[in-house]
Amino acid sequence: MIPTLLFPTRHQNSLQEHSFEVVPHTGDCARIYARADHVLIGVSPGNSYFTSDRLAELARWSLGHFEAVDFVYADLHVDAMFEATGYTAEHAAKRAAKEVKAVRRRIAKGLDEAEAPSERVRVHALSEFAGSAEYRELHAEVLHALAVDREFQLAAEDMVRQVVGGRTPDDEAMSAAQRQAGLDYLAAELPFFLDTPAILGVPTSVGCYHKTLPLVNVLYTRQEGLRAADGQAYAVVRPRAVEALSAA
View (cartoon, helix red, strand yellow):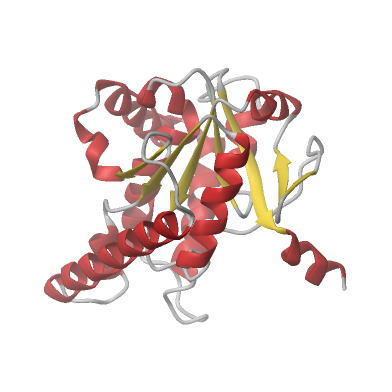
């Protein structure tokens, strides 16, 4: 869901499954991954990584390891992100609607290509969880941490700079509007980094993305402040070809 950059951690152990390399973030994450109860795949609109072919590959990989799979695509605050980078409100709304529609179509095409069974694979818009008490409680915790937890705030702002940095000229600093739009976008997604089992009613869950996110280290390795729940894991899941190219 959130396009950011990779950074190393000391606890990672690489696994190989089919065409993907799997890197659980910690030993606890590896144990939850081995349980194979559930995986959540976040998909961000406008991200060229998520082609329909890639989504089909992810569906096949997920079904080969996990009992249940959920795809969640971001559709909240996308218009505000565009508006904060210079679009008019009307143009931002149209562009956001177009991007969300496109990502929804790519997911559907990928799942169809993978012949993914509907009883094991579900697709949700992020906005569908606005009525969930569990989601709302976790979202409130995120907003509180952004207000009072300096370590959490700095990592969140680092993520926002990486996202917004791709939308502005190199010599243009992030504006206050861009910072706020980015934080709102991020905060809407973070409940799934904290406790997907509580939101979706699964025993344990692995959140996966193809790059490590700055906030992951905060949520999964520190001993105080806002942290991921015991049944929540995170893993970098990326095509093996990425590793082959980086080693060349």
